[in-house]
Length: 336
Image 1 (cartoon, rainbow, N blue to C red):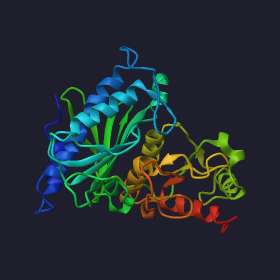
Image 2: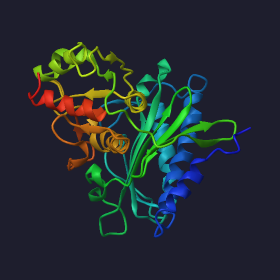
Image 3: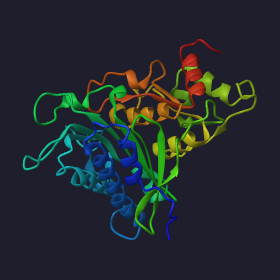
Image 4: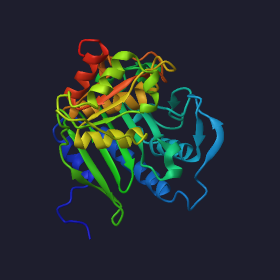
């Protein structure tokens, strides 16, 4: 039986809406639509290995990556949960080449949803935690239906962002610009219940997360920074612990709760980085800053970058404020 004092995500969203007397309820309903889609995806992820949903579809996405069956399923679930509600003017997905229009038979709304339907899905066969990442922006174009202009807004204009992590439990973490809140799915009642109130990331952590297999591809300044973290010369006075899962949502979620720095920098093979600005870096950066952390591409704040294309890539350094700022100084050659 659920705790009688438990706060459902629906109740929490409604209570947050009360701070905005002019609100129509569309934004609150949109967040609840996302929570519903997350339950559907969680159900399938938890059945992986029992049904024919593991493995590849045989096609590549716009990123040139092999599409997993679960990627395709999650992408379709999110679209079907959103297309008919009248709350969105369009969507954009990491899995689709272009913006996703709302079908002509349905009304459109004043919000845009940008999402990575299933981040880290290549790890599902190994039972590693994976996730969904989303970003919500207001429509800025003048027409009835959304355009690419509505999608290519800097991250500082996001009205909400969040992620769902499918692990030992399913958690939804989101911010609407007034703190970061986490909800854990209680399968016995089928509801997301508030489990992490007003999450704050430590100003400095003790963990660093990166793929050190790329160490020889990094520039000298970045290698010096990693060596510094592994030494007793760092600000903590003892080596940072290396923790790297290889699933962005899982690595970010751990550091959000415990503190630390996650790095996916540019290297000799990917000058512009690998992670997607709109679908991964921007939403996680918004969450990090709302929790007291920071996100950078190594030289500037992620949320200040003006996107130029739907699938633009970026280096990403994200986590505890003092750690990320220190990384910036090393990359600029200002600290030895």
